Amino acid sequence: MSRSPAGAVPSYDDVEVGHELPAQTFPVQRLDLVRYAGASGDFNVIHWNERSAKSVGLPDVIAHGMFTMAAAVRVVTDWAGDPGAVVDYGVRFTRPVPVPDDDIGATVEVAGTVAAKLEDKRVRVDLKATCNGSTVLGRAQAVVQLA
Image (cartoon, rainbow, N blue to C red; front, side):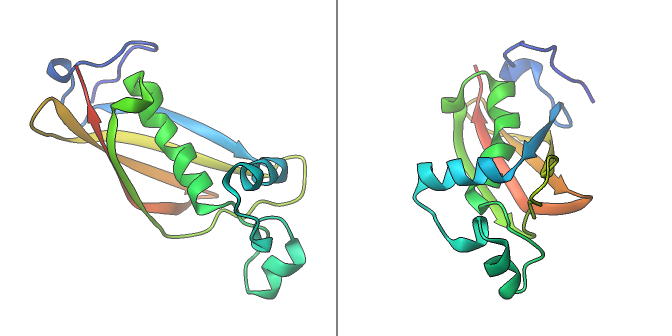
């Protein structure tokens, strides 16, 4: 399975099924969640108040699902060289990302593989996103328009 050289924009003709995108690791701290809440308008207390999160059965404050989804697709947009190249993207939220209130926070690890070559120079990329060894996004797939 081939990998693109760092910084190289992939072309449809050069990409094969099984091609691995460069994996990335995304640190998540409580401050990131506060910033995301301000940007998105999602101030649900489970994303910033530990007592409230635990009162509804969560292990800790959890990252917003859309925050996690956005972090994961960065693997694709960085590889494609243009966020506008992603023409379709969807995930299933399978597990929350607990974010402890410490200097470390949480880490989301994301890997991607070209799973199919489609018509019109498009490819489907399947993503695997994990936190603490558990899959946090299921059926994470992006369709990317290549040159």
